[in-house]
Length: 158
Image (tube, rainbow, N blue to C red; front, top):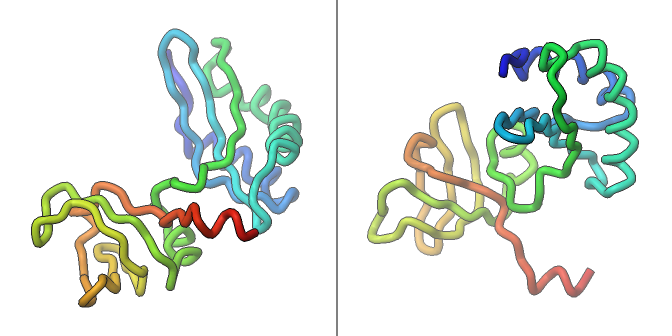
């Protein structure tokens, strides 16, 4: 199936997102038996079902006009990116500065492929972390996944 570039789709949806104070985190298209276009969104206050539904309704006519699949049927999903989403963009890293993150490496570092640390800084190529005993500077290319650490114990207190 031929589809338009996700950048083109996101650019078409961006004015609607801006108007609704919504951040488009990612636009993803999965092909196969049931093709689906998923738009992951976030807001300053988080995302709930009502926000997803409102945004879905608002972008539906825009997507009809853009016709991302050149007339082929697909399912439109609007979703929160989830608590454990990987940090990908500069905004993702900015939101987690000074917070605990989970890091999975492609190859072991000092015998470990998984650890938690505090995010101290980042740039285009590296991430600076405060480990248990020392600061670590890791190349992003060596990181399989980095995401905000979820404190399940702290969720009960809120």
